[in-house]
Length: 106
Length: 120
Image 1 (spheres, rainbow over the protein chains, first blue to last red):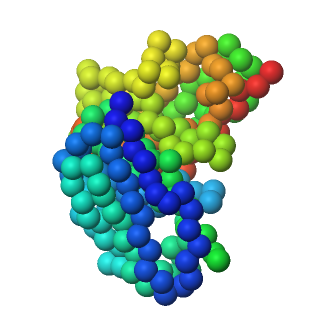
Image 2: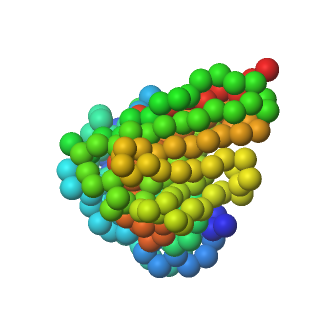
Image 3: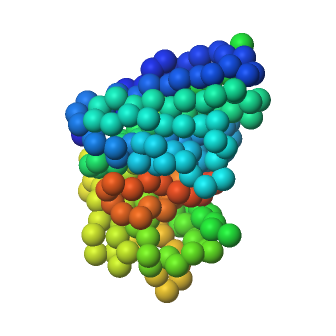
């Protein structure tokens, strides 16, 4: 299986900050990388598909980049509703997820 | 609107069985792969199984292979997961999720999840 490693595991930004979450694959996955947001007690929701595609309805402050093994989720001007856990997921082969990055209030 | 609603979760003893269901609505069910993904309490996400449009192609994670069986009823827009020989480590919220394909795709949307607890 392809291993996905996210960093950091958690961060505590302030509202209005820009946030960058990294995701590294154990082998080349081209651009088959997706990002999800999960809030407590809720199911995950798709944010970014195929590394850079913004899902319809997702605010434009979210963006994704990367290819091969290194990927990034960026949130510009963090809003209160963005405090959540974020997961990357590769779909190059049998799906696997990163361990998650918790974005919590400082 | 596109909706997935899971049911069938509950408490079961180790070695027991449970059958989960996922009712789909708001889209053409036969045009999508369907998946089960689970999340142990306080833990991350683990994909466990997928089934193709007709049900002919099925994939399982090694952690559930031989114990769990995925199936679908396209006439009833429903997805199922038969779970046998349950273990404590199967305790999790089980989500169903839609995808375009088995690979090179993404999960969207997800159901609200159903909790399975395996404990003596």
